[in-house]
Length: 347
Image (cartoon, rainbow, N blue to C red; front, side, top):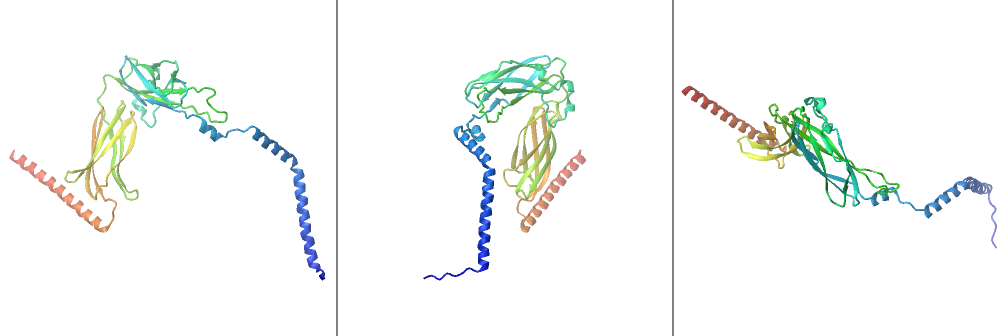
């Protein structure tokens, strides 16, 4: 026989509270269920519709779509012509999509950035009026390259100099090329047409070296030359060159090639010429020689390389080497002056 133990009053009160809380929670849940029945029905309908009519996502459309792209050759077309003459040229164009696509061409005005337009008169800046091309669209099949031919006719009154315009290529995609949810990106690509009008001109102006200094950056662990080149001529210039690094005794220890730099009239280009190998601590000379069809220009500097090792012993040896180099340089200069003085006295 089990003996029944009566519950205390506080235990009875606790059980009543728990049961009351459960009942209230059930009542609130039931009320929410009644209120949300229409929305649950709508959500169910949408879910069933999406299962019956599946659609691809935006990212899938982009992946399934063929990539679009055009290529042109050359990117910069240079025409040398005399005022009053007519010259014929052509630009090749290709594509990266497999289907045949018509490509339309258009001649547009070109406004070069960061140039000094005071070299030109405003009336003669736009050369797009001088260019005539066939308006028939170019049809490219497969990986073929087709050529857009054009004629350039320069009026007789045009002054010698370089003038610019852009030949723009625009593909027209078929209506079924794009999927409904895909982004419709149409590539435009242009070739810069450089028209050099020849004739009786003033003296040729070689490229100017506006800045040429050595930078020994321990924080970046590299040694380089900061340079700035400017085209002060009225003609377009393609500039190349070399920087020769020599010891104070004249021995060449390194050479840095200046990459081919294309400068419009009045344009300035900044270059960072990095030494391919470490320059040991010491005193050196660097000479930059620039070459273009408008002339040659050079600039020389003395510089001190401290290297990437700041050990006190290395710094002391570097200091001694620099002082010795300066003494040798001064001795050579003094000897040369004495020789010139003696020759002058004998004469």
